[in-house]
Image (tube, rainbow, N blue to C red; front, side, top):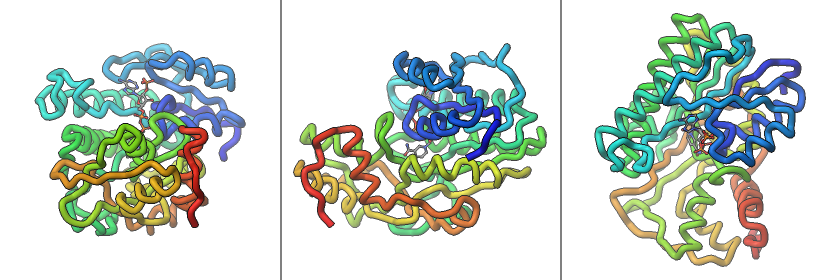
Length: 319
Ligand code: NDP
C-alpha cells in the first residue's frame, strides 16, 4: 500500500472501491467523490479520516476541489439502467445517450482536473468483449462488442468512456490504466453477482442461464482488488495500459450458485433464457504479471461475502 499520497476515489460508496478507499485511508490522504445517496456511508468515511466531496457525474462539480492528487481510482459508473435512463426503458435511446455522455464527459473532466497525477486507474468491464464460446478465456486482444441483453447501454457507455480515457491519457500525458473488471464480489454494497443471485434464490426466483451450457467468469474478491490497486497504478502508462482484472480461477455461474445453495440450504433454480447476466472468463496472464496473484479462492471468498451480507445464512461448509 502507498504511504503519504493524496488519493481521489470515485464510486467508493459502491461494492468495488469501498474496501480500497478505506484501506488506502490508513496511510494516505483520501478524498471520496460521489452523491452519497446513503448519508450513513459518508459519515462512516468521515469517521475514518476520509474527506468527502459532493459530485454528480451528470454535472460538473469539480470547481474548488484540490487538483494536486497523486493517484485516482475512478470506479463510479452510470450504468444506463431502466431506473436511471431518460426513457425508463433499458433499451431506450435515452439510456444509451446517458450512459455514453455522462460517463465519458465526467471521466474527461476528472482526468483533466487531475492531470498532474502520477496515475489514473479507470474501471471498465469484461462486458466490453464480443460474445465467444462460453468458456473462452478472453485476453485483452479479443474482439470487442457490446452485446449485453440484460443491460444494453452499459458496455456501450464503458467502451465510449475507454475511448475518452485513451485520448486524454495521451493528450494530457497522464499515466493511465484501463482495468476491465470481471465479476467482483465482497462484503459491501450490492455484494456482487453471487450475492445478487442469492437474493433471487431467497425470493424463489430462478436464475436466468443460457439454453445450453453455462456462463463462465473469473470472480475477484474486493480484498484482492484492494491489493492490486497500487500495482495497477504502478502499471499506468501513456498510452494507457489495458488489463483484464479478474480472479485467478475460472468458475461456471451454475456451479458457483449451486455451491451457494449447498452452503445456505436455499434451493437454486435455473431458467434457460436468451436474456442472461452475461459474464466471461479471463486469461489473467497480463494481470498476474502487472498486479500479482489473488489471495482469496472463490469458494472461501464467496462464503465470506455471504456471511457478511447474511449473518447466519451459511449453514454448511462443503469441501
Ligand atoms: P456500484 O453500483 O456498487 O456503485 C456505483 C458507484 O457509482 C456508487 O458509488 C455511486 O455513488 C457512483 N455513482 C453512480 N452514479 C453516479 C453519479 N451520477 N455521480 C457520481 N457517482 C455516481 O458499482 P460497483 O462497485 O459494482 O462497480 C464499480 C465499478 O466497477 C464500476 O465502474 C463498474 O462498471 C465496474 N465493474 C463492476 C463489476 C462488478 O462485478 N461489480 C464488474 C465489472 C465492472 P453514489 O450513489 O453515492 O453517488
